[in-house]
Image (cartoon, rainbow, N blue to C red; front, side):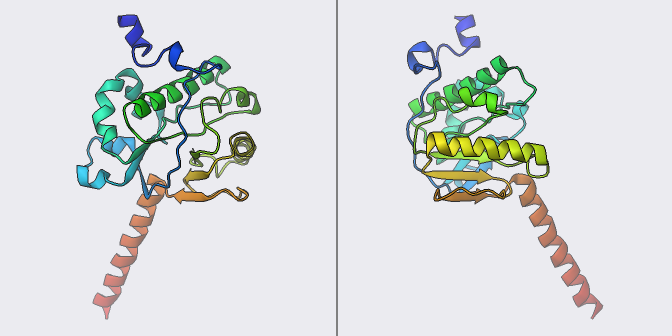
Length: 224
């Protein structure tokens, strides 16, 4: 039983998986008003969670605990209007078995959350074209999906890999809507509706700029 719990076989096992060995998520059509990072989920008051979806576009260490102790976070996550599946990293230099494992873990937690009554939006993730054979497994066709541009916009190589992967996702999944977390890229989504959400870093920059502008304006008034 201890081994089963280590691999979370007590919440998701082979009988919950499709032919590709990955749990299949249910179709979802959602357009959240706000995304909140899991790093704020535990400290947020209930009234601020209402209508918000919880995302995991963070460093892996900040949400690894949802895999290690999935039952402990059911109540906190269920207080949100919905959740995005975890964005476990897929690095280009990461061995393919590790990348497959991270895709499996993301789908397994999403499946577990759906089974416990949560609204779940699949998160897209890929590395190089070699990952296309498995990185879209378990995601339903014509569903709302989410993707992040954080950390790729300012790198030509990373941006090219992002574009190739996004093209492949649109071709394979034909999503009903794409939620983009971070800066909007120079990319043609065709006729697919897109909802853009400012990242936490960008929110802090905007807040600082507003506060700085207010401070300078007050200083000018005092000078007059």
